[in-house]
Length: 392
Image (cartoon, rainbow, N blue to C red; front, side, top):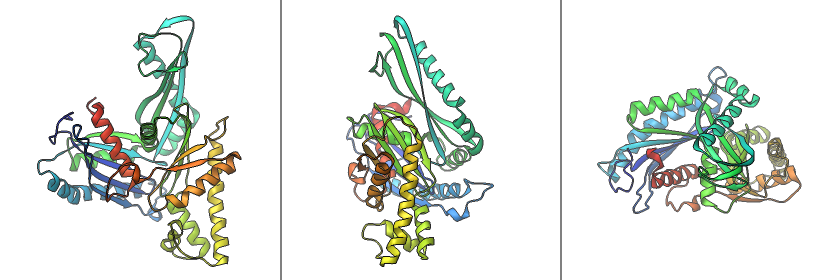
């Protein structure tokens, strides 16, 4: 169990895993609830080879990357941990899974009376169960579960209001209306099984926590930007772009498109007749110089991406326009490339103006670590450890 408030190793060390659309990363992190020190002791990312994807086993290539991550963590990672603290043990494994391997759905439920009523724990639990049932009974969820072989990995109550006022613990209060927003995180059963199997073999006894990246992202952004009420959350990984809409601090809709950093690199390589690695440098700051003809070809590819993402914004089905503020998460070397791309895509979808705020490594004050997904997960682990919620 986690030793909340201790300097010792019990519960202080964890592995955070980031499973993206085309890569898997793992890091060993420490959390000290007294000194507030949260170092990333070791981190490593393995990229999957998309060309090895098998229609009969679509998750096989990402499972290979997960296996390699566990092998590295069990060798180089543990060596680094023992050097940091020779008595250290891994007590916890925190996993965040991105689209298309994970899917996040939200549903709402409410109870309204003609006369004021006392809110009881039983009523809150009943509304949560109603929202969960509605979530699992939706046509989109049923079809997605059947097609992808998903299982529920997390259930979270995101937002509660009594008479329109946000409140975390409404039990005992009197109200005429109680509203609850609930979210379920779904993920590939085969990926979950792979994580559990490798954990048992290499870090037996460690407790596993599973979440979708977009839910973890939402939790972290609310903490980093406490005044945020309406926003779009954008996460760009190797083979996917995922968007979540936040309204009145509540995550309301999530969707994704199967186009990301590596996808765009392949599109550029095919159109420009060059190696994929060379084409990918176009996504870096100060990347490859092109002649005028090549620039026209590249711009047409970039425009195709913007159109795809503009349609993704529209597909969220929000009766209101896309929120003005967009929080962008992608890898460190491509964030400046995607920042104007996402801005233009949103403005194409809405006809309005938008501000794109990159979620960069500078938010987390960790030297020599550039993997923003790892830094983000490390930040969340420390937050939960400090709150003492990891023992619950």
